[in-house]
Image (cartoon, rainbow, N blue to C red):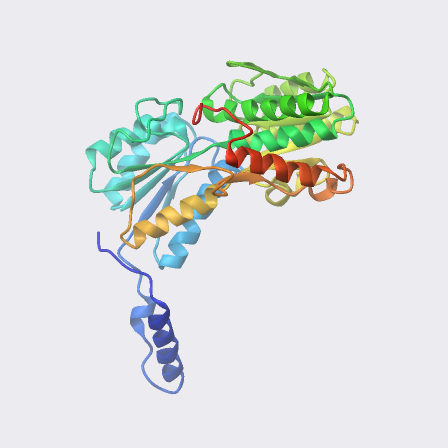
Length: 365
């Protein structure tokens, strides 16, 4: 793979000057239009690139980096786990210089491909690539030196969302459910419950969380599809009196939208990964906030660095402190939240960052 450095500020001025001369009749700078010798590729999990969250953000990160690098890129959208090995083999045959795999479900296939192709750079999202295939382990080093894990301590951001939900609820009950009990799913549910419990303790207010008890005890749909099971699971949570609901697992939130609509009640939805208010306008009337994983930015920066010849396989962990995770604005709920909530969240956020408010997760115990 050829290395390529982005144009410096001085060189950029030179390109602008040459463009001006070309406009006066000189030959255009053909080099400025050349594609660089760097081909990034991205493989989705079964959720697909239009999932309004996890896969979509990763795709947009690769797309934006390729555009800035003036590079082409390749994509493959999986329909199930049987696609992974074949897609990776296809990327290798096509000459991909960097392969981004989206999700812990692709960990085993990614490690196998990376071991067989040490000259290719890999980015594995939401798995540490250090022995487990489910995102459950993290010792700071991937099994293969050409894999860079991108991880996100979303428990910290979910803690803030849980605190806000506890402050907002009118019924005293909030709820959550997940697709499957994988650490990258339950990390949201853990942080959410910790935030609710912290609020209840600090305020002396009784607020109950349904759908998640901790230690893998919770309510799950058994998959990540927007199907009848997702809708029925959401109804199960709402039937227990929850007026704030957090679905964790890509498209399964669409089941919650159906359940909310059919309930005829004022229910608030909390999104995950992306700001649902922006990515799915259908949620705008009900989305309270979203727990953000700034995957688009971290993927973009990783691909950009690799295109510059500066690939670093050290794991990245997104936190509140480095803005790798966070919560979205309250949008249409701004007028419905308490006057003190914004300042309280700022204080809690500072406490999480300085360690005075501990938040546990599989990434940080």
